[in-house]
Length: 110
Length: 115
Image 1 (tube, helix red, strand yellow):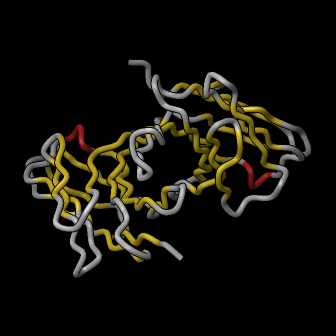
Image 2 (cartoon, chains in turn red, yellow):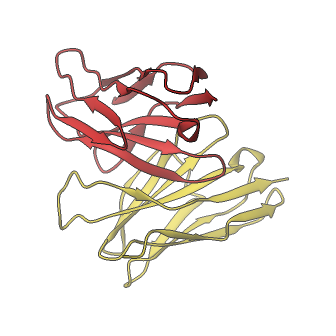
């Protein structure tokens, strides 16, 4: 069945450091791919998405490119801020549902 | 544009009781999906409602049931609560009119604690 694998956290960075959170997936066909972010005590917010191979999703300085060859959708940001501290979830659009990874916690210190 | 809202925000129940959680979909959205997020885990799909009918179900027992109303709002009902039902319950709305691969937008969740 469909599945998503994310790198385990926590990822600890200093402010202005470069961020990469790895995400790979297994699916039939070419599903839409998403990154959601969850701040403490809150629900999920859509961060970015890509609907087909080679698409690049971007938002708030975050980027991810849909790589069909490597079945990956890694999240990157050139310079993180303390306010980016949260849990990040990679997800794919399966049949009628989203399939999520286990999440990666990001901690950014000043 | 009104986002997805859920009520209540927090709830404490005892084992064996029943609970009803509510969700109002985002304006213009006709589909509601429910997810369970255990502590430290990613959300797991419970079921989806479209046109007031269940339109897909994850690996959850029948004691998890739902409804969708003509205004597209939805309820999640859980009977015979178990300790493992303690989790954050997330509602997501989307619009099948736009795209079968529609983007789902989430509410803030209801945190349920079963004692």
